[in-house]
Length: 160
Image 1 (cartoon, rainbow, N blue to C red):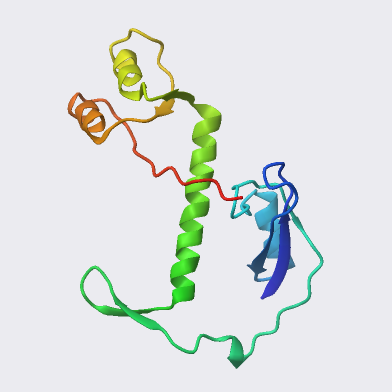
Image 2 (cartoon, helix red, strand yellow):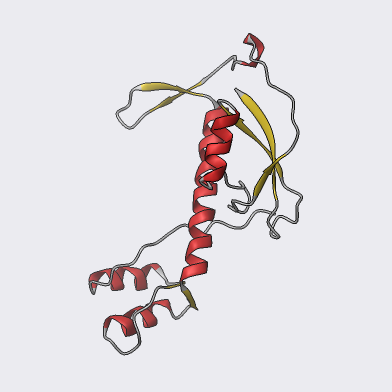
């Protein structure tokens, strides 16, 4: 495994965000980079460069010494380390930030008028378009009951 120090070059991160990436080999890094699969964990940008780094050697000291025992959905015990849990949370945050970025880029923000605008679009009073905004739980349930397809996505805050 090769550990690279990566740097986000987006204007959002202002060239200050360094993070580590582990790759099977140099070709694996290049392949992922060419397909824009390497994203900044803070802003979701794919404008990433590789800094000079030293090779990482594995040793028995690098292995986790203890694992927390959790239960899965069936009640069976499974071993999950706190490192694994944090890794999964970070990956989820990266994905949610990337989704948020795409929604903001490809949809119109309607703020607290979300329910009103969604109804207006369904009834043909305004042009059909992608929108996003805010609605109360009651408004969201009413829209669903009216047959209006909506998707409620957790709006994670931007990390700086």
